[in-house]
Image (cartoon, rainbow, N blue to C red; front, side, top):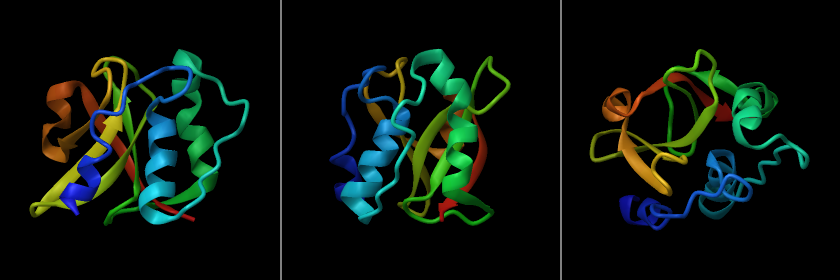
Length: 129
């Protein structure tokens, strides 16, 4: 599975066309055959990040035991609300998150346990409805 996931590492970040939510939608379609539809006129940039959590909630339900492909909502320091999304994968006997943001400039794969070192806190894991 890792080789399949790694083909999504390095996708350039672009606030207008390939932000973290767009990456989640792409991975769901390409790897899992899911058609996840974010609102067509969803806000972008800082405003979009602030709305990401509430936009995602109708599409999935919380889970305590994430599995491959589940949505991961995260909070980026110093923010208080979740505004960053990624995709969970269980690789090499531990949890990983594929995500993209402006800071990285492209999509990256991080171990869950390393996310705090990058200023990210997991708000929750969500299984697609």
